[in-house]
Image 1 (tube, each protein chain N blue to C red):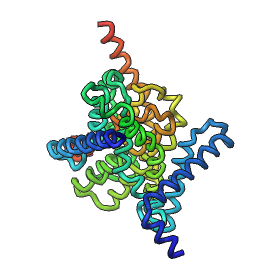
Image 2 (image 1 turned 135 degrees about the horizontal axis):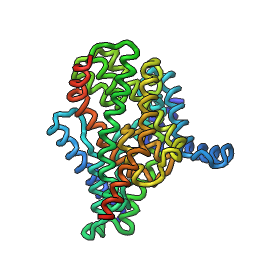
Image 3 (image 1 turned 90 degrees about the horizontal axis):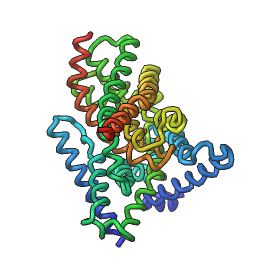
Image 4 (image 1 turned 90 degrees about the vertical axis):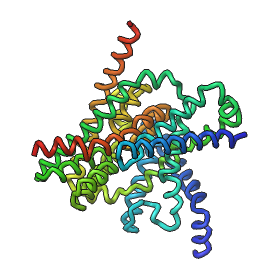
Length: 126
Length: 252
C-alpha cells in the first residue's frame, strides 16, 4: 500500500521535528535544532532495517519515492516565494556581507572535505 | 474573470502544481535548446522562480514573492516549510548508513566552521560600514549566518529594527547566491560525492540555499547536504546571542 510509505515518511518527520523542538528548548534556543536532519536519520535507519521491510518495499516504497521526486518542483515553488525584493533593498552592506560569507564558505568546502578524507584514511590504516 | 478567480483560489495548491510543472517544462526545454544541457534545467527553473518572486514582490508589496498574487497563492503552500521539509526527508530514502558515518566528523566540523566563519565575515563587513556597538555588529554577523539566526540574535540582544532588517537581507542574499552559485562552482570545489556534499551543507547552512543549490547540481547529493544544513541554523541560534556576542563585546 502506497499510503504505508507515506505514513512512515510522515511519522519520521513528526518524530524528528518533536525531537528538534525539544533540543531547542533544552538548549534555550528559539529554533528547531536539526529536526529535519534527525527525521532523515530515522528514515535512513528504517529503510535499512529488516523490521520495516513491509513499509519500504514495493508499492509502499513508491509512496516515499513520489515525494522524493517532488523535491525539485517544491524547491522551485520555494524559490518563487522568497522575499527577493527585501534582499535587494537591504542595500550594499547586506549584499557585501551575504556575498562575502558565501565566497569564503565555498572556498572552505575542499579544505574541510580533505580533513574528513584524511581521517577516514587514517582510520582505515589503523 | 470572477469565475476564474473562484476556481483558482479554491484549488490553489492544484494550480501551483500545474504552474510549477509548466515552469519546469519550459526550463528543461531552455536548458536543452539554449545551453545544450550545460546548465541544468532545475537551475534555470529555480532562477526563474526567484525572478518571478522579485516581480511578484514588486507588484504586490508583500513578503512572499509570487505567493502574494491572489491567483498563485498555492505556491506559498507548495513552497512553504512544511512541504519543503517533507520532501527533503523523503530524499533520504535509499541513503546508505555507511556514507553518513564516513562524513560524520567532517560534517560536524563543517557546521561549526560554517557558522563561525560566516559570522566573522558579516561582523567585519558591519565594522567596515561604520557600526561600532556590539549588539549591531553581532546581529549583522548573525544575519550572514542565516536570515533566521540574524533576527533571533538581534531580538535576543535588543538590536534596532533596521539592523535586524539588514541582517535578514544579508541572509537572504546568501541564500539566493547559494541557490544560483552552487552549480557554477560545484566542479571547482569538488562537490561531487556524499562526503563533500555533507561538508557543503554544514558550511553553507541555509536550508533553502543548500536544498536548491544541490538540486541544481546533482539531485543525488541533496540528502547528504540537507542533513547537515538542518543543524546549522540551530547551532547559529545557540552561538549567536551567547558566545559570539560575548567575544564581540570584548573586542569592541
